[in-house]
Image (tube, rainbow, N blue to C red):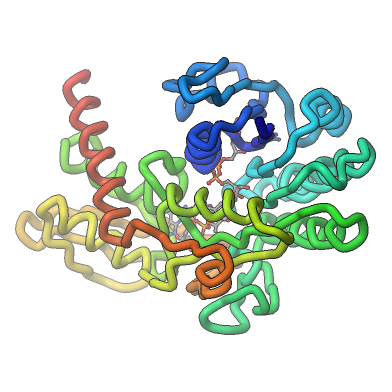
Length: 350
Ligand code: NAP
Ligand code: F7E
């Protein structure tokens, strides 16, 4: 039985990836960081121990800033594969906590790779690094692919750049099977509510149920290539099952603006969203009722913004046989259905 060690297990991707690994019959050791209140909500339905198909799940306490603790974990479990998903992953927040972001997202990756090396696990342990389309930042080419030069625009992206090159260096210097998955934005009903898609589906559903007045948004003309997290964890898994290690872009190749995302979500909730005014005074108004649904709030602007991302995942499609199953439409439907149900329950409990 192969042992997989997953950091960031309690996050969006960790939650989907653990289910995938258990379905593949793995022994899964899931890193959970200490918190005073539970951070296990996305994993609440999973029971540790032996699963029906013989797979096994264990939660392991630890933190990416604690090198000695990580080495102890690697020594105990000697994993066949590590999926390093843990990160301070909020780009806006990284401007407020740049040092923490560098420590977790940059040095955290180094600590794991150095652990593999010091324990002599170079030939045994395969390593997946959660790299990001934010590396492309102020994009130098459209669409972005593996060979597109990086131009990071946030402390988050700069920390991830360090992690990206550390992964490449440990592959080249020590022969570790280490891969970077350069993943474009991927969302789901399990997405954190601080990220724009979930903020919109959750907020709009709450407005519909009379639980919230408006959505206060940042730069709504920003454009992203949004896929479904369920599809993206399939790609992560495939990268570590190949004959040789490599770096891959995962993306849908389709791009939408935040403004379009707002229009689609409100349309699906039977509003007729029209835009009035310009700049920070612009508002999204329901044509029928005249009610203001969207306002611009400068506190959500970033000191430096990534305006445009759209990925070319031809390499992953050819070499890994990876194909996203979800479309943009089914992604929005999946998220909205979940958040409408949540808002209805919330109203019923009020
Ligand atoms: P997420 O939902 O924010 O999850 C982040 C995870 O990291 C959580 O489990 C969090 O634990 C954990 N974590 C944070 N600081 C830690 C620390 N010091 N030690 C140990 N664990 C720590 O992120 P996600 O969307 O699943 O993304 C997974 C990874 O892919 C991240 O590395 C992210 O940067 C990267 N990425 C994401 C996307 C995307 O669109 N989702 C695209 C490209 C790359 P708590 O639950 O305790 O907070
Ligand atoms: O912002 C704009 C915002 O926070 C998307 C992380 O998973 O994907 C994610 O990073 C865009 C930006 O994601 C609001 O300015 C407008 O242009 O959902 P987001 P992100 O910054 O792209 C990458 C690939 C990662 O690696 C990251 O870990 O939407 N935007 N108004 C807003 N964004 C937020 N959060 N809130 C707003 O009100």
